[in-house]
Image 1 (cartoon, helix red, strand yellow):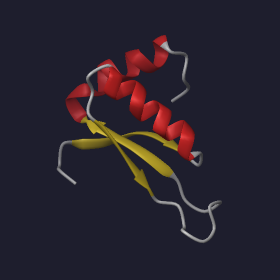
Image 2 (image 1 turned 120 degrees about the horizontal axis):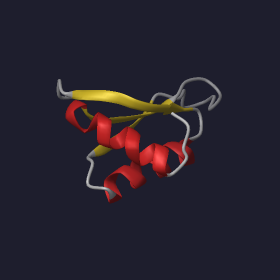
Image 3 (image 1 turned 135 degrees about the vertical axis):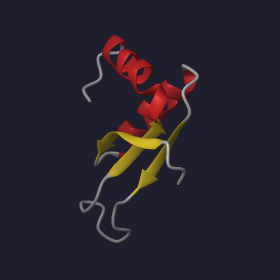
Length: 70
């Protein structure tokens, strides 16, 4: 992954992470999901959403406006 990406959101719920990613993309913020869950035991590991470092302030504002806890 490029150097200017930072972890923005972490969850054990894939759908929640995907919703956050889609909300960011709809607001013109590049976002990717990195699934670090164990393939055989879904209870181990996290799903992480990464964004560009310079988009962090705008991403936080979007999350607050949509009342999503980060």
